[in-house]
Length: 371
Image (cartoon, rainbow, N blue to C red; front, top):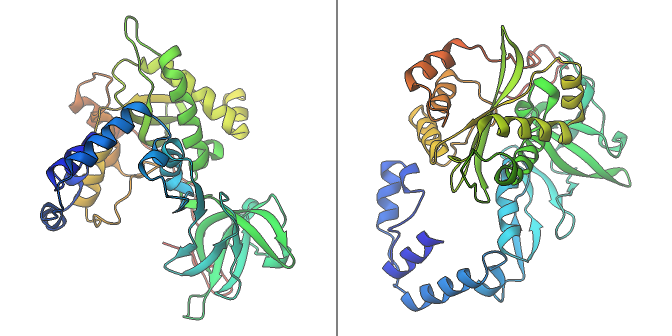
């Protein structure tokens, strides 16, 4: 909000918090953007924000009656933030990918999509068969409500039996068609405990709500916390199998006890994922470890991802840590107070848990694995 007000008063993007995440070319373009300074409107907004810390959207945009959103997978945090500041009906955008149109929204305030069967030929791999080298598939009319399937597409442009890695849950049957909702990305599923990205996000949000009352360091006061971002490393070493959960939150986590935070996170993972809870009871998985990160850590991670070759428009924060250099950077930015060099060396020497191997491409009629 402070950045918005500063920009509005100046008539240019002087306080954009994401400027450092842009490459030089894009940053130069953004710096040239200019508009009419409006200190009067800035003062109005400042008064609104002061009077309405949450649900201020209807006072800022009184004639906004609807909003088009994308709320699945990694967009869930942004959708949750919209709901916190604006009481408005949302229509979820088309379910689309570079492979084609996949589904259309069914109704307002619903993440369900009606399958678009004329856009491609759909096949579905049952969730229990996804790890098989040659998984069986079922067709649209064979789907069962409540079950999850990985989507396989064949398109008119020549894409043949292509695994999308999108796992969909069937919410309704519509004659011989169906309504589905995005569940998780198959390549974003944690091998330990079979925790999905959505479950991980729910667990971390839930634990953060408890930090101020239950995880403060002695003599410290922890304010209400808003999740900035997170990543999870699956670790298998001589001491056992566990999650390393890297969390960044606003305003900061300096007053939080990492040991108490780890207990709360571990409990939250068990609540959202019964399979993880069962693994913990059988002592097949150890308690999760929590690494509280310094402010702007994930901004630095994103910049590093771009430096390693990703475009600034496509760079994403990895939910599952698989690269040693990302693991090292996250440990270095931990608030644990350990020596960064030692942490980096330790991170490079600690093997991550190997994920479930992807099915290997083979002769027809094999399902093609998306790379």
